[in-house]
Length: 96
Image (cartoon, rainbow, N blue to C red):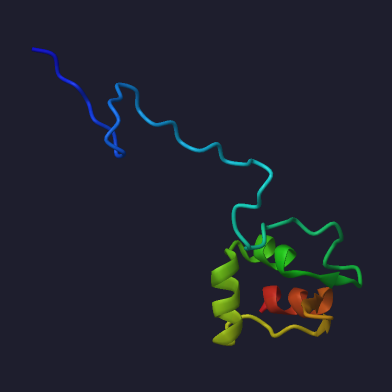
């Protein structure tokens, strides 16, 4: 006696349905990836969210939660909607 496998549409099938191909060019998430600053904290300059994540060793969500709870210094300014911190502000925070 042969066993016949019936698919979802009632059509006999013996092969599993292939998974859809995932486009590898799509961004996985909207979160920022940590990035080591290109400048020294002793020089004047601006640091972005990715730089802070790298310096503090935290992820995106932890950084924003810390900003909300005032655990980390508030941004010194914004370029449009993008926050930035002066290197002097972060240097003071890390030395405290």
